[in-house]
Length: 337
Length: 98
Image 1 (cartoon, rainbow over the protein chains, first blue to last red):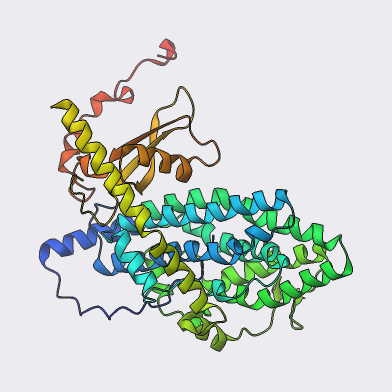
Image 2: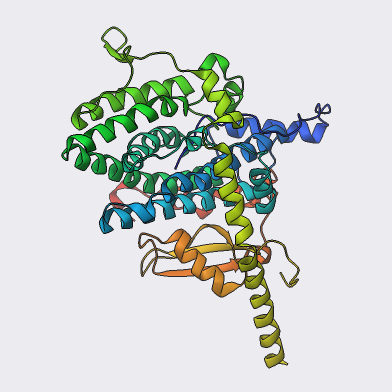
């Protein structure tokens, strides 16, 4: 499961200016603010400001899309997994990602958006998903690196979301985080096995780490000073830890793991800073991040085309299931009559 | 629910009993064409790691809910009935645990 800072705007129109709140609305707003200030939870039928609802719909649906699109780069390797064991593991992981997408779509639907609306937004290219899935999985080592680094980064991002102020989102994230640990561990263990293999296998792991490291750091989203929506997200209890703080936490956690694995992280500026008590690291290429987010990554077109094809190819199954259900209902009605 | 012309599969709420002796607990929702289908989907979506021994699925449209938290008159009358709680009653210490 994967997130990035979902403060990325979708291609939707800017909201109209809000009217001055009436007395009743001011009271509802005051109640909402009090719940948020007390670190309480908002549930689907509670009153909430339109902007809070809109932000959550955007963030949760982008998160769901990321899970669904995230099945593609790895799904690509199911038929070519090097052993039956690895294949079974990969199938389970990809199925989990599908499940995570479903938990999240359900959470988003509690806010009044429909599944079809969200799919339309994804399939038309209007909705964003995590930039990380627009990079290719060139070798088997990429599957391991996705588990170790991409899922590792996602876990960092998602653990604070378990305390999100919106109940259904927080509950979905608790479920997701429970399953996520397996994803990271299987990836790391798969890389450990390769590192004990031939020089070619070790080189394959290092090459995959080189290609994924920077895009993974970018997953945490733009630096805090360029994240205008972050402050509002923090105020609403949707976001708990800033992009830069999460990124730092991830780097600090990953460096010792890379040492055990025996790979080099591709950053000459990466070193321990005793004064800060953290690792310093080099500059991230944000131009590339925005290029990929806005549709110009190595695999954007391929990912979306694969997803749309799968949806269209499945149309007859969805229709047949509805027709079958209608027929069964009619038969039951007739028998009862 | 009854229209076969539905574009989306209807929504179902899923309740899972995690083990014998415990109650069914709401764990989320999903779309499915009918109840049998919803059960199969619920097994795949919510019990991939033996999280359940029994599943209920209920059409979401069939649920009647009380008013949300901001309109709390519904539960208000209970707030001033503190005599319904055991701590309301002072019992001499020498009586011990009661």
